[in-house]
Image 1 (cartoon, protein in one colour):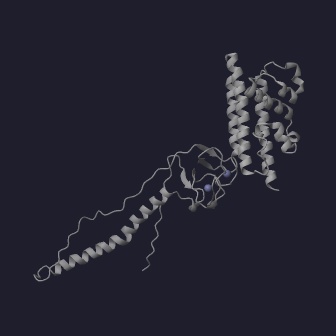
Image 2 (image 1 turned 60 degrees about the vertical axis):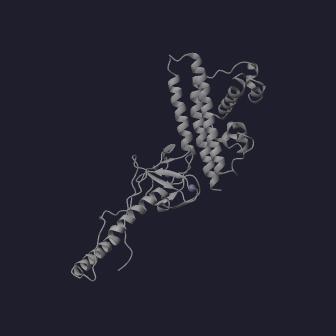
Image 3 (image 1 turned 30 degrees about the vertical axis):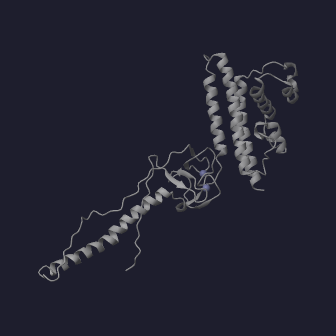
Length: 313
Ligand SMILES: [Zn+2]
Ligand SMILES: [Zn+2]
């Protein structure tokens, strides 16, 4: 008789149909929804370089659970029948020795309810839920940036687009006619700043993935479109139809951030056309912001192009 028994165990999904996963290498946790994404059993860690078969991604809690189920099954299939058999043999011995005053055996069994506790668990809550725009996998992660566990595409561009979508919605709310003027002004500034921050976040992530492609000097390279373009050998300028406009608004954002929006020498040095406006406040308009949102979206696409094509080198 073989000592091997086969037990198949279903690992339960959470209330949203997601299964928890943990990377062997970095030991970080994430979740994904079986049935979405690619038809593959190969999985990439969203956080690090590790990749492997899906069954190398069990979490310790899932393994403990599976082990407890397997032990119970093994107990019921192997040990319990032997116990029962042993028990029966003892009973038989007891019966045979019943009338023997010299040698007597009595068997007492203390209930049959022996069992191994099942180690239940629940999956963790995560910070960002995403649907991969490349393969459709639904997954959730800690933090914001990750690679897709199925197709390995970096989600930094998706996150960037989502952020820009959000600023677009904010702008929609602002264009309502009953919005007070000062709120409008502050909000346009806030939207401009959010767009540049989103682009900066994208840049930091791209630099993390390809440090050779995007230098870490000067500081905050992705907030400074002028320098970024130079570092990329005018890649952006040659591709973007509204490059000058983008440069202007990146500088305006700098003004708002560091000089209350008042035009200074540094601004004029980069945009001489404003020399007559020295000392005046730069007033953003809705039209400009509308154009900026669509321009920075295009900028994101150009950066994606740069990031992916440079990968092939
Ligand atoms: Zn990992
Ligand atoms: Zn994907």
